[in-house]
Amino acid sequence: MILCVYCQRYFRISEGTKNCNTCSLFGGCQKIKCPYCQYEMPEEEEPSNERANLN
Image (cartoon, rainbow, N blue to C red):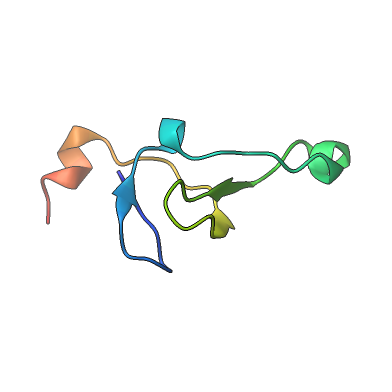
């Protein structure tokens, strides 16, 4: 799960959207858009179960 830094809601990477067409020159969009508030943030890997259980 990813925490949106703007609205503080959790979502999965698969729920977020990528719709920036101008980044294709640089290897694709490196940002993900929150499905709740539409805030764009850098894409991060979802933690594995092992890392998620450390907190």
